[in-house]
Amino acid sequence: MVLFKKKGKQTANNYSTIEIGGKVRPVRFGLRAFQIISKEFVKSKENPTGTDFSEFAFDNIDLIAYAGLKQGAMKENQEVDFSREDVEDWLDSDFTLTTPILKLFIEAFVGSGSKKK
Image 1 (cartoon, helix red, strand yellow):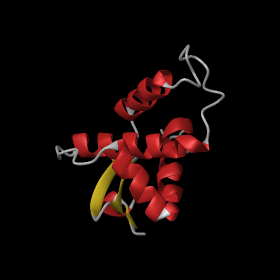
Image 2 (cartoon, rainbow, N blue to C red; image 1 turned 180 degrees about the vertical axis):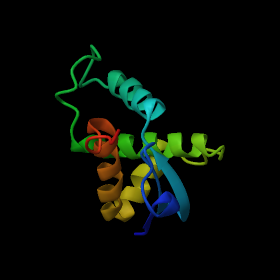
Image 3 (tube, helix red, strand yellow; image 1 turned 90 degrees about the vertical axis):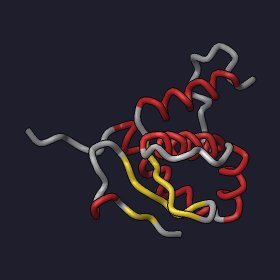
Image 4 (cartoon, rainbow, N blue to C red; image 1 turned 120 degrees about the vertical axis):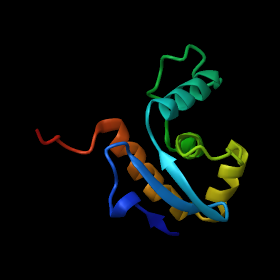
């Protein structure tokens, strides 16, 4: 597993790159990624009303990773040349890839600390 950070550090846009699926891919968690996650989670039979995120659990890591990779590709004007199933396979073959993806997701979701003025 190789995790790169743009210009040596993570940007305020919660952007990074990760080696997954045979190449280095951008990962970004912003509004689009959260929309993808929300839309897919709403479709699930575990959450028929689309309002209960208390059941959103670790078994949704493939969805989180897919959303971040998709938004990263879109932001960099790259082709989205993978599906959610591809991401599942990649994570299944190297589960350690979940750590940097979840870290980036959590930082985007809750913020990465106070901002300097």
